[in-house]
Image 1 (cartoon, rainbow, N blue to C red):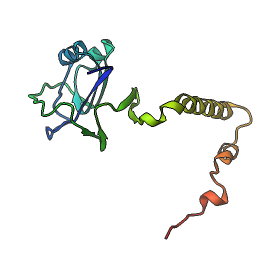
Image 2 (image 1 turned 180 degrees about the vertical axis):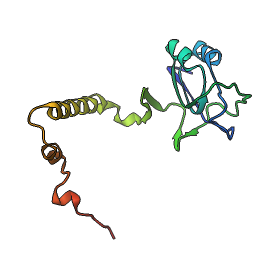
Image 3 (image 1 turned 60 degrees about the vertical axis):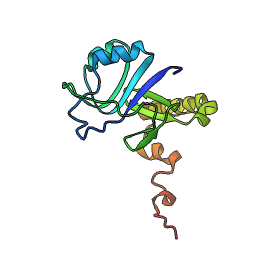
Image 4 (image 1 turned 90 degrees about the vertical axis):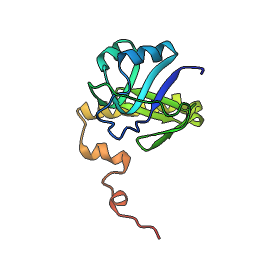
Length: 155
């Protein structure tokens, strides 16, 4: 398959916190076959060794144990942490975890990212600055105003 390829693995073992699908050896094989990363809703092992290879590794549980595993399907949609993932989905991962990115947002994504960065930089500068008050920090967001603190109901 054309890359970059990220393996998305759903654990069906019944003990996702106890058994690792992959470690350094399986990762080297995956990398050799074109994968750049692996995401598992269960356990993986050899975390430091795999990261030292430059391979992107995301799991819910780091464990030490091997597992007797079986590949049930390849290329089929999987559900990871309640989210359906299909071949061809765009995935972003960093030290905080992963997120699926809808292809339709790509054209505006650089500007959206820059807007978040600029807003957060301004917030951090204000919070660290001499004019900081909690009320002034809340005000532009509508926190604490009569409108935002009034519960709303719908019919």
